Image 1 (cartoon, rainbow, N blue to C red):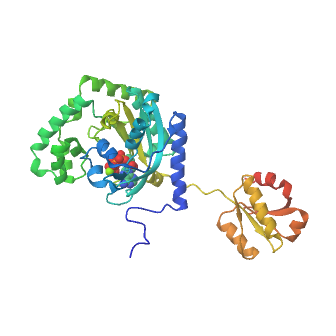
Image 2: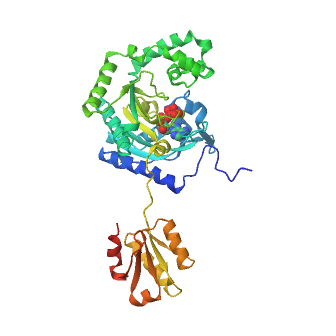
Image 3: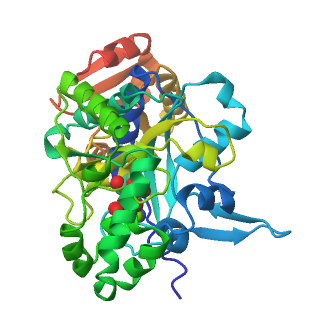
Length: 414
Ligand code: ATP
Ligand code: MG
């Protein structure tokens, strides 16, 4: 009976790791706010159609990775595998198309039924930004710069590389698709089962295959660059010029395709070599066709998502929890006053622990164990004097401090 284990591919995030997650999320949120991106949230589950339509019936996520269940009367819902579809749905159903551009920051759990391994889970977390309603390359530049800035703020600027490609406009994509079908059809029998299937349903996805045999064939496949029309070339040139102006380095990778159907023009990934096979930490692109595909008006969009687990694995120093002050009542009489003092100090903004039980020595040991900054010893003598004995746990020094001066004295502890 395994029912007391977390379900395969899911994990508990214990406090140490949660602090890392929070650094990632809070840093991203703060940087995004400087760019004018505001946080929003959509439900964790949506009607299955929302994802099927936007991710495409043939995408890996839709064919293999969705958690779907019935909610009665023939209605099916799916735990969200990503954030963009929900944001686009909210844009349409909430009438937000009246107030474009919409710039959002997003974070939360996502669900994909894939093979669990380090950095790859069935419930994982993403931060995500979306910019809807801007068709100009300037939007692509902004959204990439925002990603680069967040990685830099996390201290990961040196450890990640920006890879960049263009998928062109729909016309270019169509021409390229035809060239790919022609090329891969000649190697039909050598393709993996999945890719043979993609050949008729979505040949671009073959370029995304992780199969070894496929990868060899992909090396000699036609290049997207040769099938871009002038408009698509100009657009991409605009993006590159903006990045150059801002000094954001990139590597062009003409094999980079996004796994999802609605991407056009710019596609990008920030990758690292520090996480083994799970090297993509932040990925995104332009999705001008998405909102229309969902049944809304034609609204251009661009965005990216980053895996919080992968980013927190890369953080150098796990941030330490704040060092508390520990209140240690000595003797029965001081208990109630200690409880009150603890609460007063918390209200004054300090992180305060109350030594619950045990003798003085035990309680001080516990205070040291939780890396407390100071202990406030509080016995009958102190009680009578309206004071507490402040013990600096770093220097070992002690002094008697009257209660009305206590907050001020504590705030001077480094
Ligand atoms: P991959 O090729 O690694 O499967 P993907 O193309 O499916 O990635 P996206 O849909 O672009 O990934 O998601 C953006 C980011 O979310 C990824 O770059 C990664 O950091 C993270 N991510 C995606 N799937 C998982 C997962 N199962 N577990 C943990 N993080 C994930
Ligand atoms: Mg995937």
